[in-house]
Structures are given as structure tokens and as C-alpha cells.
Length: 349
Length: 222
Image (spheres, rainbow over the protein chains, first blue to last red):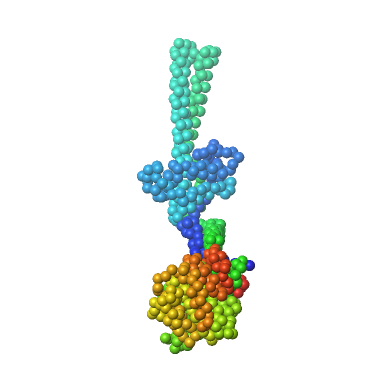
């Protein structure tokens, strides 16, 4: 059986009980609500870079080209420098922003492979336009860095070949000079029959031929490297080709069901817990007599219950009005008690 | 019209509640005149409603049984009954107890059946007055004159005269105020009144915030 006092206190404190049940879920909604977010995604076709090496990052032979690029891109996106460069490109921060400028943590950038050669690059931000600009900025920044890295490698290779070629040419010139000197000392070698019989002459000419071959190889390598350098951006673009550019009219990112409904429901439960605890404290700490139920156990009979008498008035049923009316008419109960059984004349007197 | 009806309803509510009190306490007027019943009304604290219940009980007994009732204010601390009936007099019970006035001089007939005896303004020692043999004789005189003598006693936990005066009565009603009087105070008051004939407890000024249909649905006690 429910104690009357508990129900009575619950109804008397109904505003205090309802307040946490209503306010806590609202507060949870307000605190956890975030502005709408928009996602923009670009799809990129990626292939193996020349010499099986991507321009940036390590190429795992057991991964697909798209996976290798996704790993490299996500590694870059994890760095503050790359994000800052992307934000500058997208106009999120000014071009001349200092390196320690605060980067909006609510902006999310990501890359993921969706096939062997398909890579998706996405951005989530407060507007569709910004998300699209961010995705484009990621692609541009990546391509620029990849091209720069490629050029740096090719330039280093070309420098190496140039130095080797210079050395090889000097060696070739030396060998030719030694042959000319030998011919000047042995004029009889102008006759091809004598030349064929001279072992030293044969050794000198063979050394020159070998060195000429080395020079020719180095020239070919340098030419190929210079060709790579000239074609570098095109090669990178060909290996990283945007198929679906980022869209501006992207859909709103839907909040998860857990966030949308879970927090208010959790708030509701917490509010109910607070209300329940408040009710329990009030109930346990109220030792006053509210009804005859509270007289149980006292070895004296209960004779009766006199109700609270409220002065008449149309609005007197409203609790606050009733309280004000009672405060303004302190002797109403006594006057009513005095008038019991009195004739109207007596009451008037 | 509506206001008049509501006032009438308050009147009826109170009358029914008081009728229940004298019914439950077995108060029936003695058949012989001169053998009246003295009923003391007290409460643990001031403001619990003992004076209201005293006035109502006197009026209800007079009305229901059509008999003479004497209402005595023995609460020397508040002396509010005289004011309630608009009696512009300083003379009262204390004057009779000190021998300065006769009972007849301080008795005021306020309607056809009710006689009021105010507490009086004379400075006296309430403790001595409560313990005096004059008071016993005085109550006997009142019982001779009326079928019921309703005595508004002091608050039990605030005046040690209350238990003494209560012993002079044939029965005592203890009034508690709903939502203010604690059970511990009531038990303490009953302990002080243990030598008196306690008729029972009246819960005064009870108001409920619980809608009637919920009371019925949960089968809550009144």
C-alpha cells in the first residue's frame, strides 16, 4: 500500500519534481546539440606510381594502390602542418596565419579506399561550400607535395648522373689523349695491319670504346631523368586522377540515433532519478502529521479531521490564490466555527 | 450567489467534522441538568487550532443537542476567545479565581445556548490559578449551569498548566495541525497528558493536494 504522505508530498512538490524531469533532458539536448554539418566527398582514381613507388609515403606491395594512397593521405592529415596548409588553401585561415594558429577541431578530413584503384577523400564542416573547398584543398596540397617530392628525387638523380657523366667524359678524353700520344710515338700504326698486331694499341682502343659506352649509358640515363622531371606533374596527375570532384550541394550529415535520442533519454532518466531522490529525502525528513495514517501506532483514538477552510472566492481553488486568501483572512476558520448553528440574525450581531 | 454557497459549504464541512468529533468521543448530553461534562481542548503548540476547535465544538454541541454550552478561555497566554466574540471586557476567569469577580459577572451570553467566559486580563500566577481548588469548584459550578463546558486549554508543550488544567476536565481533546505538528511533539504532549482522560486526537487544517480520483484509485486513508 502506498503511504498517503508519500503521495501527498509528491503532489505538493510537483513543480520541484517535474522541473528536473523536464529541465535535465532539455539541458542534455542543448549541451550535446551541435550545428548542422555537411560532408563533401571526391572520388579519385589512383594507379601505381612509376617504379612502383608512390611519391609520398611507403608503398606496401601487399596493399592496393588505393590503400597505399589512403594510408599516406591519412598520415599527412594527422599532421598539423598539412592541415594548416589545407586550411590556408581552403580559406579557413588566412594565408599569412602563424603556424600556431588554432585549427577548428570540428572540421574533419579523411581518406579511405573504396576499391583497388578508387580512393575517397572527404571533409565534414559547417557548410557544403567549405567542405567542397577543403576536399579540393586536400587534393591540391597532396598533388603539390607529391610533385615536389618527385621533383626533389628526380633532381637528385639527375645531379648524380651529371656528375658521373662529367667524370666519365673526362676519363674518355684522357683515354683518347693517351691513344693519340701512343700513335704519335708509333707512326707505323697508321697501317691497319700493324695496328691489329699491336697489343698496346688494341688495349687503348678497347678502353676508349668501353668508356664511350659508359658515357653513352650515362647520357641516356640523364636524358630519361630529365624527361621524368619535365613530365613529373603530368605523371603525378595521371596516377592521381580526380573522377568525381567534390560537390557543394552535399547532404546534411545525420546525427547518430544514439546522440539524437540517447542523450535526451539519459537526461530524462537522470532527471527522474533526481526527482525520485528529492521525493525520498522529503518523505524521509518530513515527520509532521499529514493525515490520520500518520497517527497509526499511537494508543489514542482519532476523533476526526477538520479540513482547511478557505474563504469563498471563485479563484480560491487555485493553490496560490487560496494561500493568499487565507493569509488575508486569518480568522475565517474561527468565524465559520462561531457561526455554526447560529441564526442569520445572531451571526450578523 | 456562488460565494454564499461556498461559504455555506465551508460551514457544512466544519459542522460535519465537529459532529464526527463529538460522535467519536461519545459526547452525549447528560440527561440530568447539573451534571454537565467538562471537555478540555489542547494542542502541542500555539496556532495548531485548539481555539477554533473549541469554538466550533461549543457551537456544534449547542446546535446539535440544543443544550446550553459554556465556553471557557483558560489559555491565559493568548486570551483570544473574548476578541473572537467581540467582548470588550477585561474581566474573566482569572478575576473569578482571584476572587475579584463573581462568575456571573464574567459570563457573557453570546447566543441562545452559548455562554463565554473570557480568560481575563488580571495579572495572576497561572500556575497557582490552575492548581487552585477554586478552579475545581468553578468548573463544577459551570457544569451545574451547562450540559457541556468546553475549556480552551493552553498549548501543552508551552505551558505546564495545560496538563494540570486537563486533569480538571472530564475529557481532553488533543488538536494537531496537519503538516506542522510532528509526531514526536504529539507523543510528548500525550506523555504530559497521561494523567488526564484523553478522548482522542483531532487533525486540524488538513488540506490535500492529491486529486480525489487518485485518492480513490490508490485507496489512500484520509
